[in-house]
Length: 390
Ligand SMILES: Nc1ncnc2c1ncn2[C@@H]1O[C@H](COP(=O)(O)OP(=O)(O)OP(=O)(O)O)[C@@H](O)[C@H]1O
Picture 1 (tube, rainbow, N blue to C red):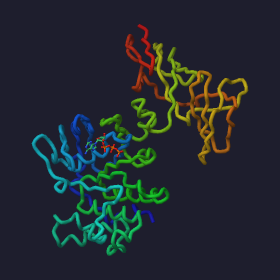
Picture 2: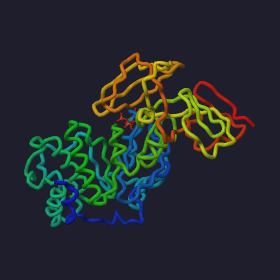
Picture 3: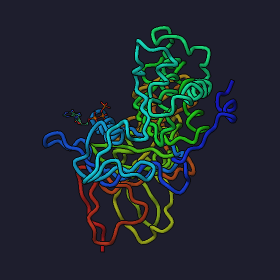
């Protein structure tokens, strides 16, 4: 049964879901440990009901960001506002239990000595006693576990425990639910189902969620927006499509999916690189400039060609597709996805081209550009630099 479709009668939109008030606002929130900035001036506005995924390398500050929002850490600077209320700022600090925030962790963090129902009721100690039992039943219904109300955590499967953790987080009707790698302890087949169920419940209840993940596919497929973090900063906050198709920086391009970078040149509005013409760039007619072009494996086409200097150097079978790595004449490599029936053996000479209609990202230095750099500015390429002609 699709859990989302069964939930209509349980939907309860809260004051926090007032569409005019952002569920969460970070304004310059920062946190240092000693001299290390774990979080460096974060700005974010999350709309009611929005689901935002957060991804970045280990140590980039994802958990610290969640801890600041939850009230488990005090910001050194900036403020945190939840459903219109300042909960951390220059003169104010609300402890976690006074914030309208729910938490779901990777390890579920259920109390082992309490039953499922008691775990869910735990967050309701501020609610009138009379309504608690009904609310516990309601959220257990929401996660499809009313029949397990009397069980203890050790009697639950991983997926069930995660749904109880979600029910507990949602019981007090928080304005924001923070989910810190909630599915990473589940095995792969279960993960997809629990993830779909969790997203359905968040959507159905109109709850705003910030979900930290290490999984790129999860970040792109679950989020209305994706935050890509790096070194305590938000490198890009954007829709999944733009994060993948129009990465703002070299780092985002390489972190979110496979990407290869080739030196390229724009002249007469045509972008060319070692493998030939890539695309035309209307609006770049006057530009004569060096850039780097970002190529993703699905954008690179291959054809056996004995006359080509490019050689296949690795072939990886991934099931639905086969990843070919090709060394070009320059020694640089690019990767190409081929359908699962296509296998160019290692050593095959191949012609490499860019798939038609590709609109690749261009980089000047580490930053993506969508228009020609200003005349006379310096365009830095990794390891080189060039001056845009006057
Ligand atoms: N209590 C602490 N004391 C000192 N340094 C800390 C503390 N907590 C985190 N840090 C440091 O702050 C930085 C950010 O850590 P954080 O746990 O937020 O990263 P993360 O992105 O969640 O990492 P991961 O993906 O590995 O969980 C790291 O350099 C970490 O070593």
